[in-house]
Each structure stands twice: as C-alpha cells, then as structure tokens.
Length: 288
Image: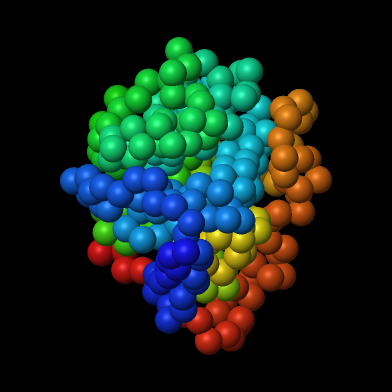
C-alpha cells in the first residue's frame, strides 16, 4: 500500500492518503496529472499533487459550486464554466432545463481527456449538444467576449497559485461583470475559511470593486484542506441568498434549505472582513 501526502498551499500542514493503485500518471504542458485509487474515497484526481476530486465526495463541491447560483438566478440560459476539466460542474449545470448554451473553458485539454477516461460519470456532460468546449485560458475567453450575453459564470479553478491566478484579479472580475446580463451572477471558490482566511477576505474585497452585490457561502468537503470550503459571489443586482426557482433536480446534498444555511451570517462576515477573527492560520495569495 502506497501512502500519498498532500501539502496544502499557503499553510504548513499535510494530509495523507493510502493509495491502493496508480491508474494514470502523466504530465501536460501545465501540470502533473495523476489518477489513483484510495480504499475509502475511490478514484482520486490529483493535479500537481493536490486532490481535485474523489469519487466519494465530489458531489458536495460540484453541487454547491453550481446549484446555489443556478437556483438563485430567475432564468439561467447561457452559462460559462471556466476550469473544472473533470466535468463535474458542467454536469450539474446541464441538469437545469433552462440552460440553452454552456461554454466549457478549460486551459488544459489533457485534464478533460483523463477525466473522460477515468471519471465517466463526472464527465458525463461533455458530449451534450448544448456544450461548446474551448481549450484556452479562461481569463482570455472572458476578456474577448464581444457583448454582455451571459447569465451565470462559474469558475472551478485549481488552487490560487500558478496559472490559476489570472482568474482572481481585479481585471478579470471586471471583465466578468462586462460579460454578464442585467441579472447576471458569478461564483468562484475562494479556498478554506479556516486555512486561507486572508485569501477569502482578499477575494471578497477585489469582487467589491467590480460588483454591486458581493457575498460568501461555504460547504463541507472532507478532501479539501480546511474542510470548510468557501465560495465567493459577485452579482449584478440580485441577492444570491434567495431561491428564485423551485428545486426539481435530483441532488445528493444541495436543497433549498441548504441554500439558505450555507451563507455566512452578517455578524460573522463583518468580523471576517474587519480582521477580528484571530486564529493562527493566515495563508494568502498575491494578486500580482
């Protein structure tokens, strides 16, 4: 039995997993890609040694990343999914009958190929006729959009290091705003509230320069560092806390009650943004 050790970015901690089998190991232009098996979590996708998904718990992340805004928007027809080469976020978006078009933008085409081979249930939406796959930098795709015709933009990136940093800048968030329709909404993960408090706050502050409505919610995730994963929202005018369409989709975790409970309370949010929550882990990323 092999033991795999993951080092969480920005903080001095390690998480170890037993590996019963290595199914794939290769390197693309951008990163090392591995697919391994764990006795408890099943198949795991690793990028540069960091866990991206496991068969056992991927639904927690993908459902919460997508369905909160997809149910908060009154009529999401045109959607952009940036990153998420495994296809999990795309799969969840396509469950909404309102969706007419999805631009699936992933910088590393090899991740898409590996996911289709080793995680077919996760990558099940790739061949849907509503999907247009673009293998390119998501930031460049957004900047080159000719008009404001998108309802929801979802960023499912790797950790905020390396090439993923272009998806967390002030210029990118403003370009996102310019792509959105009048009721448009945007969401990205923003790391762990426990392990990456400074990153969570920084993303909120950058979003506030681009959007009139900014919010923060979180969900549990056993295989991501900190276990309490955050999602940052920018909206043109609608509050993401309100469910505007009935929940008719079969999900494992997300529902209307979870939707409301996942948002950070006003008092906790104020303490977080004011730097009044004093715990030792203060990892952050540099915007530049």
